[in-house]
Amino acid sequence: MSARYGLAVNPWRPVYELSVGERQRAEIVRCLLQSPKLLIMDEPTSVLTPQAVDQLFETLRALKAEGTSILYVSHKMDEIRRLCDRATILRNGRYVEEVDPRAETEASLARRMIGREFPKTSRRSHEYGAVALEVASLSIASDDPYGTSLREVAFRLHAGEILGIAGISGNGQAELLAALSGERLANARNAILLQGEAVGRLGADARRALGLTYVPEDRLGAGAVPPMSLSQNALLTAHRQGMVHNGLVSFGRAKSYAEGCIRDFAVKANGPQAAARSLSGGNLQKFILGREIGQKPKVMVLAQPTWGVDVAATATIRQAVIDLAASGVAVLVVSEDLSEILEICDRVAVMAGGRLSPVRDVSATDAAEIGQWMAGLFPDEARVAA
Image (cartoon, rainbow, N blue to C red; front, side, top):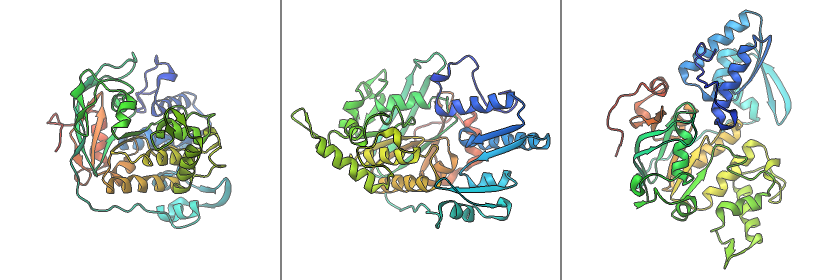
């Protein structure tokens, strides 16, 4: 079934070892195996290449023709217009109206959904600075027997630049992120250079001290501790921001820092004492992003920054990333959302089978080419761009 619909899954791999994207593919295959009469899909295409999206849509249209009813939940307006016969719009948990999506534009649908004009990201032209992060011939065997080992990964990231790494989950992104964040050490010190300093054998805390911040894919569990308050979660990674003196924690300063994140990123929460698990996915993501940006990083690494986030929060997060780069921070975005990559990134590469494709200017490529590269069909040329 996975081969029939182009949804690559390993049937023997434990689910707890899968990334969010791989779990979603497994869910789709499991549903299709049941020959459903009612199929409910929540953001199913965020893990698929453009070609696979087209293939899935053909499958859904065939299921519809055979009598299957499909409830399709998505914040991607183009998909709603392409696929759906009717669209019910919800806002803040309430019914707004029902429309014929084929008679609407993407802008009009978005406007109805958020109740105002859809916020658009705004790019600023600015010069790149020096190389802030360099990865050279990084090869790491995966600890996971079903994981993907990294093979000769190499790229350079400049200050003021947003570099996007696209790809279908399970192709080495988790291993690369672990290597960059310091959760997994490289075999050689100079395999990773941060601000010109060899950090391949340094752990996460040492890299943060040198100006690296990280927003992980799993916001509840890796990005935040669910039962802990927002103040306590701010302390976990931002403790260098005046929260600790002579080994003693200033919980007042942790509270003030959390309040700043809530205010600056319009986080809907019951104050800094609110438990992380009480926030919606979008609001927790905005808080985590604010917590990391507030540390004034030199390099920021983001994994799936708008995964499962509503359109308004998505726009807020993407604009914050663009503004961060414009201020001179080097930003690496690992995302399976091609529209996100093409909207906010300056250059893009693709991870496939543990290898990194050549790096391209976003203006010199398109979704079709990136989709081909996701299948590993990229040229075998020098992969380090200036």
